[in-house]
Amino acid sequence: MTARPRSDRSESFGEALLGTVLDRAHELSPHLIGPLVAEVVERLGGRRPQLLLQDYGQVLLAPLPGEGLAGGDPQDIDDTAAGRCFLDAQPVELPEDDGVRIHLPLLDGGDQVGVMAVTLDRIDDDDRRLLDRLAALVADLLVTKHGYSDLFFSTRRGEPMSVAAEIQWSLLPPLAMIMPRVAVAGTLEPAYDVAGDSFDYALNGDVLHVAMIDAMGHGLGAAVMATVAIGAYRHARRLGTDLPEIYAAMDEAVAHQFGPDHFVTAQMMRLDTTTGGMRWVNAGHPSPMLIRDHRVTRRLDAPTTLPVGLGGAEPEVGELGLERGDRVLCFTDGLVEEHAVGEEQFGEEQLIDWVDGLERTCRGVRAVARSLSHTLKRARGGHTTDDATLLLVEWRG
Image (tube, rainbow, N blue to C red; front, side, top):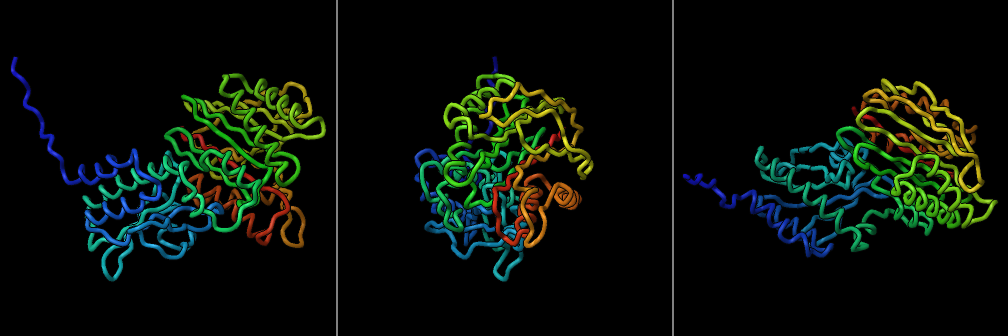
């Protein structure tokens, strides 16, 4: 039998470049990510590399410090080339006197970690391909290394954070997940002082699991109660139980730990990402809204039971078949019960007007969720008396 000729296996320039990152990644200390990126960029003929991370308030992109990385002031997400790259998750090239500045999104599972920026004398398709792949590797590095160091937390923290908010941010999944069949994006306000609001999601096979909660009270006590509720939700979900049983598990955990005078409003959903079939239960929470053809078409009202912790009856399960492109907006009461400065509560009608206006921009769920939260923040003069959290789920078909 004649042996097949072996293909060329010699190392190309591109493989060597990216291999430098892969070969060192396993034992790379978090603070050495910057020097490694600077070394690889220099070999590509680039200069002034920056790694810009989104701050917790989703307002600025803050430069990661590190030897070889360019510093500078944080950049406004709404008014810079880096911010445009961040919001649209697309590269942005900007001609400069000494070359071309290219900004690349740092994406991990659809979550936008930040932006990598590099200047080259000129740029061609080979440069774009290599930089795009380098940005993907760097995003993975930032995600896998963040749990080993406070460096990334410190970079993203634009102002002092309360202990309650510290607990809540450590509890959250990534703020966004973009997959072929489904997309999720959420926000929390006030970012540096949130306490009782939280959400969680998990994509297990073809099923997306979603929960949103609002623990009574404010401050550290509300954060602790939210932690117990989310922990009970995850525990029951991972056992494979159905939505009514998940409610019962959360109800028992909160009642046992905090007694009869404490409660958490909650909403739990399951979405079959192959068919668009959605099921949900509501435990004293505001009803979610269905967004179809870029406007709010209805509230998803269903029989509700008592908030978890109060021993309510077994909840009835609502059911709905989503159409391709449908979005479901889940939110806590702080989003509609807040007041504009010197005025009445925002209310659901004003929320619907905001959603419809933003939906007409046809932007992705991450940008819409962020813009909606910031619209609310501007309307109340930058201040809030309650947590205001939202979560957008899109069935992409």
